[in-house]
Amino acid sequence: MTAAVGGVDAGGDGAVAAIGAAVAGTIERVFAAVGVVHTAALRSLAAEVSDGPRAAESGRVLDEQIDRLLREPGQIAVGLGLVAAPRPELNLPLRLRWWQVDPSVGRLVQLDPDLRPASLGYYDYTATDWFDVPRRTGRRHVVGPYVDVHGTGRYLLTLTGPLVARGEFLGVVGADVPVSAFESHLLHVLGLPRQTFLVRNDEGRVVLSTSPEWLVGDLVRDEAVLPGPGAPITGVPWRLHVRS
Image (tube, rainbow, N blue to C red; front, side, top):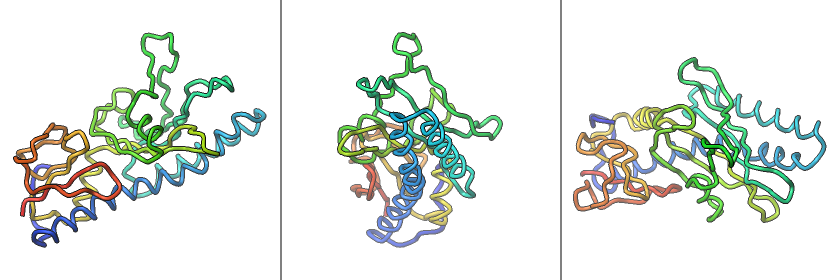
């Protein structure tokens, strides 16, 4: 975002509440899609330890669920799926079922990163924040903005939640959302707010901004230079700063 014009015009706390609710609502919309994937993902993981036909069928159901969700009108996520924790005791290594919309042709493709530990291109997703934070905390998490070098090459937000069965962490389900799509949807909901505002993540990095002073991805840790004292956004490790 680079401009702030007409729309939300409530002053002070009213603007903070309205903008914060819109940001949180957009996040909840994405997590609703992730929640739909959750049940099918648990069934797919449970079927891994059973016979081959059941495992294959569960995998197909999960893929079909993801396909349907990614093709829904108004869907802002471009990637959805399951990323499993390795289970050495069952001889199950790193594995994932993650689908993304290919930006070049608009069709769905299944990601196939290099998950071989001996390879030079090995991608150990267990070390990423989007996997590790839900594993450690048992709660959902949002990572980004960052450049997706292992997938679309876009500037993304990744939203993930833990998969747990009988107290055992089995992996995460999640979604990839382009920052541009997140911005567009939010501005549509807000109706182009009059107030300048920005959203920062827990690292101090700008997630969204309606001011040319701060660009998406900028690292801003000095709150004294920001508009407003900052208010937490429900459901995510972000803070909202609004210039009254």
